[in-house]
Image 1: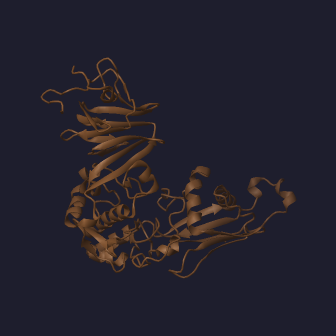
Image 2 (image 1 turned 180 degrees about the horizontal axis):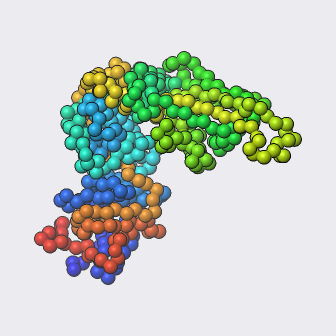
Image 3 (image 1 turned 135 degrees about the vertical axis):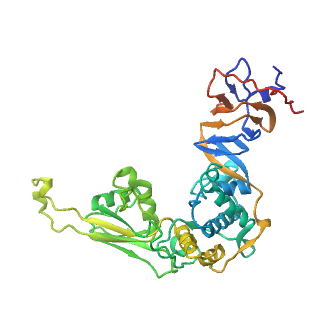
Length: 443
């Protein structure tokens, strides 16, 4: 076997007498596919190239994807939806990416050297597996037919926010978040009746459950609850609050905070009760689905004398007071509603008409100078151990130095006190990192 050129190069290699190679000051390991090799991470497949990078909080995995490869991996709506809805989604996703890069990376993106994350905190990116499935060709066609198109405002990419469902009407950005008004992110009607599964949802909670969840989020509202009421200015006038009255006074909580607290603590504190169940019997995707809801107190019909409560069997106790929350839509409801786009496409509207409806005053236009060619996607970070399953051979680089090729299969990358270790899943297979038959070492 050819001798490796230096200790630095040897740190991530598997050599004949060492089943695991421990890193020595190697902070970046790059994986580059040979031929049609793909990389699987957390049950999703990617084309790469991929980087495993050591940061203070652990390992991060970043894919450098070509623009259309990235767009092909966006998994925000079913690919079976009408063509115009898919095209509108592509333009919105491409615009959101361009806006994200123009604005600058998020704090986490800056800390881990990626442009955009792969989760719903940014926009859902699932790698290449989705487009290889049913109707994937329809999504690729939507990418091609809208190539280079984004929404532009003031010469820059627009903040093309979108969410699953608005219910009957989208929200003005200043009514949801502490934001200045943005002309193209104002409330408009959304024709989703009979189309969205989130047309109406109900969360019916006993008083003690409601109070306990709010307390977990730092809101002590007191008991018994005497009133609940949603208050706020008219459409476009700013944020609304949920006001909760008790003998201790009135507690006013931003609607955004109410939703955040219930979605963070509800299912942990009361699994099975939260999220509530839809009419179909399946649980809703979140405890509180949107910021558009009303709340009503259903008081107990009677109350026994306090000194008698401990003597009454549970069957004789009156029903507890309940708080009934009724809302519509799913998501932040700002900008384009995805189910609204489908509803408009079903009615025969073109993607340009859908976009100009939800992003008032804007139209899709070709602006390739505002769109990146390559996207660094943060797939995961803060890990001590990462497993990558390669479908075939791939090249390995350490700190930018090309080591050579290794065989496919499952590989573990582990954080060590001195760097990164690269370990095969099957330690009995000790693949030397050297020239493959018919190949030459780089010079």
